[in-house]
Image 1: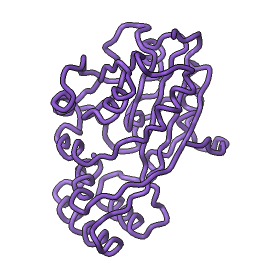
Image 2: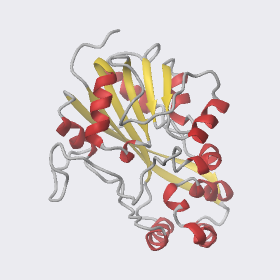
Image 3: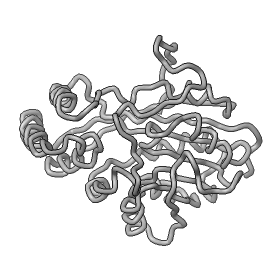
Length: 283
């Protein structure tokens, strides 16, 4: 992963210390859990994994191996990042608000000390974690609240690491057609909803002494049926409601025009932001 060029703040960016909320017109949490609970099977089956390089970069910034580290995976979902961290030798506590998502995580990875909760009120004692992770989840939180909770739970010198896989196909006509369709059919959806100054938002909280942004690119090949299931796993696709099958039929036709063999070559850009709290990190 390479360090991207820095960009200046733009007019309209949040003021230092200001809160942030999802650009989509709803929250991930519901009265009973998570909007993703109904999507757990599709989520587990087709969501992309994350490059191992993410953990290599986290270790480099932390200055220690993740083997034996105490890690909290917030918004753990079905456990995609949890299992990546476990393979690195970390001791992982998944935190997830959705009971169905959490049940799926435990079905696939039994025996973990998983807990229901969210990043704005972590159900954990102060100073117990070396690393707190949010994979594909930080854009759902109120940044000042969740950053303060992360700083509370981290040990001195520990880090908050947040990352996303974003489809990197802005120049492709099939992706442009998809985004046009979503903006017409999904209430409030905008294709740039996750474009925010994440690193600056973390700096503005005052909890972190170092904030680093890294990015890398990769791609996967996925069959058409699985690709459409992945579409179903997205909250803003589910929000289409009664016209969901119309959306998926149009998407199927569009994808087959771009990929006649039915195998989608899907490019991704993975964005990683790491924020360290002050103090020496215990080895």
